[in-house]
Image (tube, rainbow, N blue to C red; front, side, top):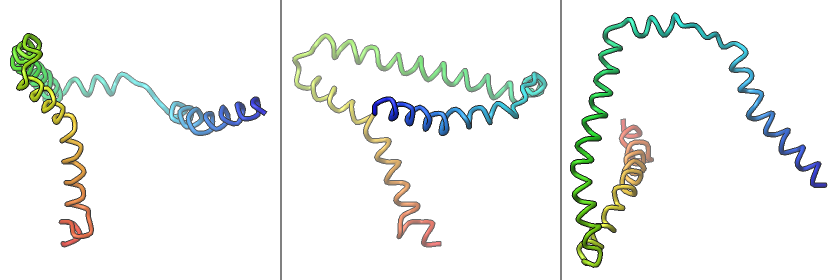
Length: 117
């Protein structure tokens, strides 16, 4: 009985995952011409360069702000204000998804912006 269910699960996995992936690579043609044409454009190289510069600068600025803050919280663990700040820092993980959901509700809801047009 267990073997039959095992074969069923493997078969479903094979049908859902493996066969579409094989179908993707069956007609896949890899050629370096696409990479050379992409990197020959000065516009594309400038976009990549600016993306790396922006990522580097934002990580440096974040570290400059976060390291002293983390050190001060670490050195004074029993302070009530530090406990409050630590608990408030969790909002940065919770609020963006909630704001995205409410914005989608506001745009696509029954009385949303798109339905009023």
